Length: 204
Length: 174
Image (tube, rainbow over all chains, first blue to last red):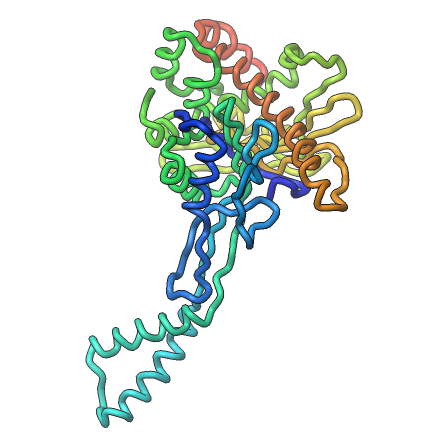
């Protein structure tokens, strides 16, 4: 579900730290450096990187193309190749048969079977295109807040890692405790009370 | 501040208590929207509530869904010790309506539907659409900030155990 979908899911973050000036150039540089790398003609099984909002298959972070007002808008793309185990099994059987016949052997050693499996996975990896998943985000730099348009665990974890690697800033996910600590305007005494809370029993 | 990973699990209960308090407040304390500048606002329970009841090592999950679903089963679950873990809400400002689900443990927003916004016909319309949609998303985020802010201030106050918990208990038992 992307930013412009009819229904969206949002996970909220607070961004800790500031970028070096000029900010737009810093963001542009970090996005370019960590842009998605195509793996369709590569043996890699997975690729994670930034891409342009609205043009996710042709990332372009030149100028301020990713900026609207006070907000940075771009997307994270996760490309993954999924090769079914049945497909690997089929081609391994074909390759083993071929190797046995070529070598005039009856059995293959454990190591030979392992090498065949690796070779098959590599060849299939080159033939099977990666499936892309795109997740949009809005980063309000002035307010140090970021909305990520997915509630899924794995993309959120990827986002936290990629963001930290790209911008050298920390994303703090806003959930009941961190919201109380960082966003609710609690006094030091109240924050202390927050960290000591235990569940309430409403029933009984 | 406590470690983020540790505090997520340790304080999940706060999100569940928030949603339980919110259900109670919607039914009993319409003043929870008092911070809104707009007079014609309303907040109602939507078409889905998920509750969880932990008894020892086992966990019971109760889901109530449907536009005309009665909430009696939910009240019964609360009476047995359950807490609300997901709550679908309908927020209205004049003739505009937002519908969304809040997940207690993460305070994340799911399945958010905003009022009708402009159609995108040309590439140039995208920027305006982003601005318009972001404005509508921001409304819900402001609402949650206000509601959770009210809750957490009450939760760390002495009033929580002295009066609020007792009011919730009475509401559950009535």
